[in-house]
Length: 261
Image (cartoon, rainbow, N blue to C red; front, side, top):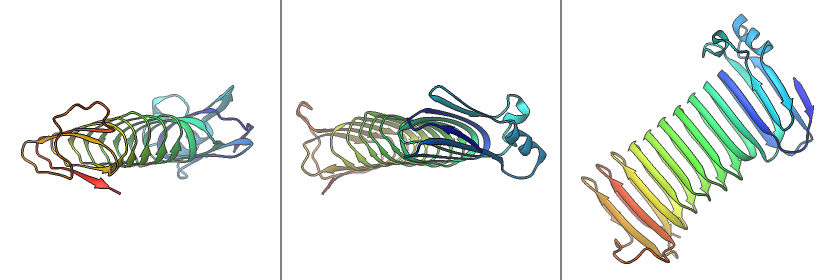
């Protein structure tokens, strides 16, 4: 167990080849970090014993020893960190289960395989994942997310965002700003849009969007082989002074735009 006296936010950098990473951003006056082997194998024990945990200035870095033998996915570690609330985190894992609870300023996650669960982000969130579902709470800033074959779920997004997926469902419960979405064969579902420009494009996937009923809407929706269902008329008039602008395209998916209370 490593312990440092620290009550103000910091930047956390974590590298983990495989295993699990748990980070807790909470009201506290110190920093705690623990690195243990996932099992009793000699390779895991050596990697845990030789993992570096350093706090230099405003940056806490946790990384396994350099060398291909330790960075292979066969090495499995359990990393648990407790940091002050509103800290930022940059986490890079090859194949690990990742949980980031609490409230963060910025969150940057890269993972090849493994589920990601995160709390609230007051700044921006950047997510890159190949395979493994991602769930995040409220994001006040922008979101940049790229996924090969994973579902992405966010409770609320208040900043301008970009989401690009090959496949997998993207769900945003509440959207309050611009969103650019592009997918090869994934579905997009937005519970409620209150403002901004939503540009959605899917080759083979459905797009479902709810819009606050008291908002003015400009809609341009087209599909080649799917169906379009909407509570709003497609708009020929200017987008100027319109609160919600929707530009939705699918090749073989359906589009549904409906009012929300």
